[in-house]
Image (cartoon, rainbow, N blue to C red; front, side):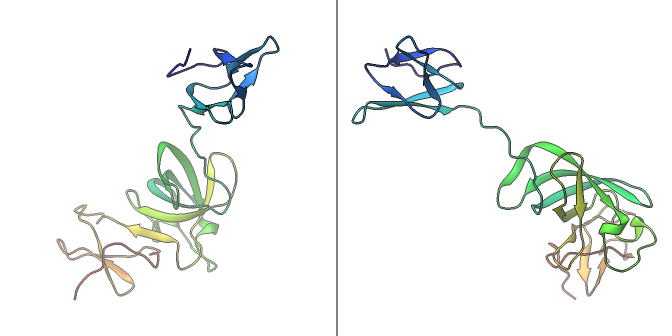
Length: 187
């Protein structure tokens, strides 16, 4: 009686046929049952049965993870971001909220967060805590804005020296730019 998909508590087989391992258990009555929603995998040579999870729990950002986030709100002291990717793990199915405080931007005094990030910027940041809302830091050369849009015409800004330049309306804007800014200018 082999099945393609099982739910928690559903009988997979009997103990005389296969012994339960990862994701399967003996119910004490001689039946092997599933612990997860998933597909049973039978090892005929060793007489073992396991259940491969159908749905994995999403990975959450943890301390010292490098993340990419979209800035959605900026105030003088605090910025709100939506974390959409964890470096080395990939894009997230669920967006997490991140908070960037003005003290986590630089070792130097920053008067206002408007001087370093703006709405619509994508930043590379480091996670400082274990639970939402995640506290972020962009201290260091490798952290900061990696893609920005012109606040006037919404064109992508090019990196020109240490400032960002809009090729369309010829504005220069200041940001705390990361070492790996994605759009470099050719001048």
